Each structure stands twice: as structure tokens, then as C-alpha cells.
Length: 615
Image (spheres, rainbow, N blue to C red):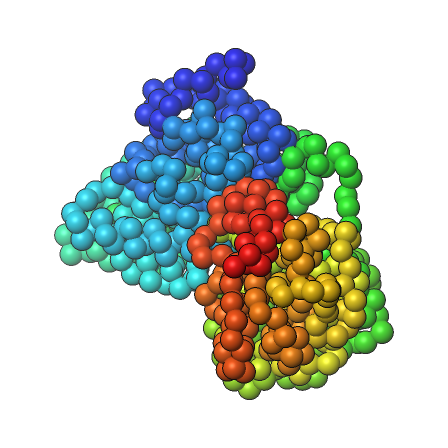
């Protein structure tokens, strides 16, 4: 890092307090260059972090972290924050096994207040922090930094509605990097924006208020009249009364790449005796031309080495293509996305003019998306909700209340199921199985390859009647192992003389089969295609074996392995049963590294077969 002359001197936020505006701008350039260099090597979230460099510098210039607590929403925009808070030297390990996380992590630093891998929760957390400060008599601030996309999540409005009723030291920074929340009109609005972020304007405003209030008898009435007139003018120019009617002082819009303006507006917010919402306008991908032009392509990027291999077919793309083909033949099929249209493969659906009217992107609002799907189902449509496993967690109540009590035929295309890799604990898809299997009437499929995905998607759409999930992993298929009869509830790879049976599903079934081939002692492999409810054929097969090892890339508690064990016990089976699954949050690493660390790779499973067979 020899070329990073300023950044090399930053070991804590205190080190930027004395820097001039010119030095801060130079530091911003160095930070951008280092983030690009690191993400090119390690992968990560690029465009969002390039857009928040000056914003983060101004925050740490004005506020005193960790006494002033900064909550990032979503946390993937916190790379500059990590660089300024003692993790400059560790930043090269970003998203690598044993290295620092791509999201805020309190275990890494006292400057990270909470884990924040999902959107729309920052105002709620910061509101709680601000209330705690009031109760303890502290005069520090709680600051929520959220992107405009988070405003599509309902939790934001619950938090705004409650926080605005207080006088707590809460500051909400709305990082508007895509859509116009409060569209300004013409040069007058721009001029007033400059005034409203100018400290001299606020000083004059305060002096006028003090003078008017001292006028005997009429002072209060005159001030109220002027205040109402000012609010009416501001409403016509800024359309800001939504936030102000909820009890927030609205400041902005302010240029999110002008450190001087940001510092001034943050200083003003510190002396405002009420909750404040600061509207900051930034540009995603700032300083890196490709990311500025195509920010959606540079949201989350793979390391440059893997990108050079070109875009490959994946479970997501095969799902999208298959769904589009089915939808062209059946006008009842609709597709739903929660701000992840391209990432879940639904770009094939969007690009077809015939299908586009039946594609609904609800934003980062998974709960709404699920219940919206129920509405479509009630009136005879076949809604397919494509959603990452980690984000489906946000819609559990809707799966229960709206889709299950009175069964609604909603199809869940659960993408990124199982271990996903470098995004770490907040994004691992290992909780959808316990969630969905807890719902009476639900059905779960888990394909191991593209052929099975196509078959099982059609089964979920046309052969089921209630909530049906098809879950599949991130990335591509492993064709080293094929299971026969993928259209049946189970597939069996039987080995002569085997007394041990491995039972699994999805990607992990391929690893189980590889382990059976590598083990010194014979073992058969039973793959569950229809994972839940457990097929009767699975019981009939399993009861002929003395030892059963159930393997799943999911949580052990509430997982299919527990269900399978109970089914065997109730059937009177007596033998050795072992469950290889997850029992804790899985930290970031590559998928192979994580599987090996958790004992779910083929090598560990082969050793487990030999160990069980020797007992």
C-alpha cells in the first residue's frame, strides 16, 4: 500500500478529525482506489461502497464513533467505515475465510454496532439506541444510514412512525442513490437547498425566531403564521412533509459527494432538538466509470479471476428460462421478485414483452411479496415467488398466516439455498427448511442438477395445491453424479452388501454419493427429491439398513434429518442413526471451504461412512 500515503496514516476515526477539506478529498480518492483493488481480488459489493466514500468520511469527521453509534442499512455499504475504524491492514482479507466480514460485525470492532445484512432495520435499531441514551442521560447520537431501496421495506415506516414522536438524539441519513424521493423543482429549489445546508442561514433563522417570540402578545401568533407559510412553500418545492409530518426535521437534499456540504449539514443536525432526516444524494459506483454506467452489474461482484471465465449457466438462470417457457404456454403463471429480478434469473421473464405484464417486482418487501402472491392465487393465477433463502426468512408470518392456514397455491423458488459462501452468516440459506417444514400442508423439493430443477418446478406448479417450495443452491450443477428417476419422490444408488445408508437431498446428495464411492466400506445413497413431507418410499428403503447417516446442508434443529429420525422411530426401526448437519451460524468462506469446515464435504463424509461401518 505504498501509494496510499494518506490512507496509511488512518488507524481510527480520530485520525481524520484534523484533515482539511483538500486532504479529505485526496483520502476519498485513495479509499476508492483501494476498495476497487480489493474487490477486484476478493469479490464483494462495489457500486454501493464507491457511492458512500465522502458520506462516510463526513460522518466520522463530525461525529465521534463509537460514542455516536452508526447503524448501516444495508451493511454492504460499510467498506469505507471499516477502513477508517482500525481495519485498514485487515481489509485485504475482506470476505476471505478467517478475514473480516463484508458486513458490519460487532465481533470485529466496537465501531460496528450490529450485524446488518438485511435491509430496512436501521431506524428501528437506532431509535432503540437513542432511547437508551436518553434513559442513561447521555448526549451522544444514534445515526441510521439507509439506502433509498430500504424504503420499500415496511419496517422503515413502523420505525419512522414511532421515532418521530420522541425528542431523542436520532439522525436518519437517507442515502438516495437511485430514485428521487423528494424531487426538487428548478433553480429556486436548488438555491433554497444551498441555504438550508448553510450554517449562517440557520443562525439567522434562530435569531429571527428569538426576536419574534419576544414581541409582546402577538409574538407566538406571528411565529406560528411564518412557520406555516414556510412549511407550505417547502411542501410545494420539496414535497418533504411526509417526513416532517411524522415528526422529523428534514434537511436536504445535499450532494453526497461534497464533503464540505455534508460536514455543514451534519453539524446542523447535531444542534437540532428533534429527530432529523438528512436526504443525501449520491451516485452508485462513483469514481469507477463501468460501475457508474451499470451500477446493477457492479452491486455484488465476483473476483476478477472468476469473472474472466465469462458468465456461466447457473441454477438461477435455468430456473428463469424454464419458468419463462412454462409461462408462455400458461397465462396463469406469474413471477414475483423482491428487488432481485436479475439475480434470481427472472431477466428472461422481464425481457419477453408477452411475459413482462406478469412480472411483479415488489422491492425489498418479501412479506408483501408473499401475501401479494396469495392474492393472485386466490383469483386463479399460479404465482412463483423467486427469493433468496436468506430473505425468505422475512416472510415467515405471511407463509404461516396467509398461505397455510387456508392453503394457497403459492410456489416458492428458493434461490441460494444452503451455504452461499463469502457473504457469510447473514446470507447463508440454511433456515428455509426448518421454516417451511414447520408449516402444515407445505411441500419442499430440492433438485441436485438442472434436469431435476426443470422436472420439480413443473411438479411444484402443477401437482401441488398448497405452499410448494423448490430450493436450489447458488452457482452451477455438479454432473459427476447422476441419480435415476428424478421425477420420483426418491432416488437410490444401491451398493451390494452395504449395511450403511446415507440419506440426503439437493447438492449435498451429490457429495454423499461421492463419499460413498470414495469410502473403503460399501454404502448406499438415498436421495430425497420430494424432501417434505417425507416420502413413504424413503421409510421402506431405510428400514432395511442397520446404520443410517443423514446429511443435510441445513440447520439440524427442525431439519429434515430430525423429521426422518422421528419417522423411523415411530415405524419401530432400531439401528444406529447419525445426523450430519449445522448447529450454528456459518461464517464467510468459499463454499468448498465452508463445507469442509462443517464436515459436510465428500472427504469427511467418506471417513464418517468407514467410522460407522467399523462400529
